[in-house]
Length: 330
Image 1: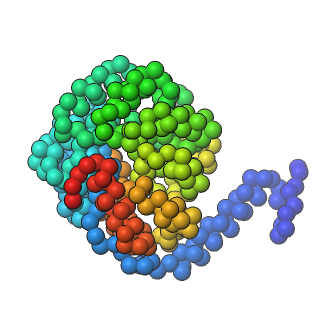
Image 2 (image 1 turned 180 degrees about the vertical axis):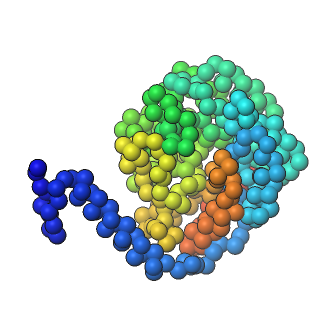
């Protein structure tokens, strides 16, 4: 059996060596946690606009309670179009009941593959005749299978940014001043970034919203922001590392969270946010029950993160940018 010799010991296999390293890293993380303080630098106490949330059916009371308990005064909300849990009627009811609190987006389908379907393009454009729809809800362009979700034969849901109907759809949107949520994760950056670079360039008048920064690194987000003034970033789920992908190979390609184990904003993310304060938006991406149940806790965590920024920058991320993008006056 081949042994691996490194400073500090001899290991019988690479697996044993990697296990040793992981234990060291875990120990260091716990050591860092011992020095954590509950309050890093004072929490942001101002208004909060959740720039992205989504629901299935039967979540009317959940949304109202989340808003009331968290102090979030406005939310960009859209429905998830599951066959048995279609949330569209619930979103419409919420918009009718509390119109100033809900910015309503078009529903999110889960059946698009390869290209956008004719029916999706037609139905979405028809919905936009109703002025209550103020943005295009999340379109899944590159979405890796998650350990807690659907598993597909290809390991991902994928729609090509250069698809014929994709171009047809964005051409129809070009002069409507409607923001579009375009979901793509960076587990295949070399495949996807050139395609999205071309899409953003082709439609400079459209505001593209990139949910949770594609779980990307600060360098990758910086590359997108520096190249395209029409791309906005939501920071949903960037308060923690992502470990829910069903593929470890894809998971290791994702970037880090924006904070360390103690909730302290990482220097590279602070620098990026301060360089582009008008391009980031606070969001929760509350979607399934487990995320909605901890809604107030997530908002409170973000108040701690925003409290580490200057007041003007914190306000921009917390609500000003979202109001500008969604056209919702404070």
